[in-house]
Length: 239
Image (tube, rainbow, N blue to C red; front, side):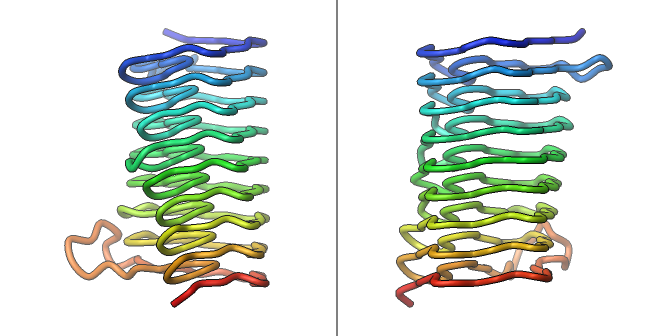
């Protein structure tokens, strides 16, 4: 089976469970799911994916605008249990509850993404901009700006994930606890050509907070952050 959706506006819809705007589950075949040139706005989900949920599926997402959606987790987009390719995705003004991922929530997935604009999203949990758990994620060319969360205002990477980020800016993100720009725990993270500017945290790690895993770790000894060409400017933490 395949799903192809193009040139749509998905707005002001509500789901009691998942996928306030669209929910796609169980399409793991070739051809796969393709979503292109779609606006998701002002949708609400009681579960995952305020704008869009794609789960147990493989998908290509191109030229999406995801704005002002709300969910328990993955306020804008939730991706799980599949292989995903993202290109030119704007995620603005979405929100999630304590389960995390104000803009984007990724769990148990393989994601390759290019050109992401993740701005002004909020979460009362982890990852105001993007939350990554149990996943392998590679991102090139990203802006994470003015996102807010409890931990990991811009991004949070946890639970044995492998995360590679190249050519990205973390600007003016904030955490009400730690990791204003980026929170990392029990994961392998590689950073290249990254700018952390004016990110803030109420306690630890205005730019980056790394909480080392000491027991029941999923990263199998690879709990680390490595990087090159990283610039830190005007970040602040109170502790």
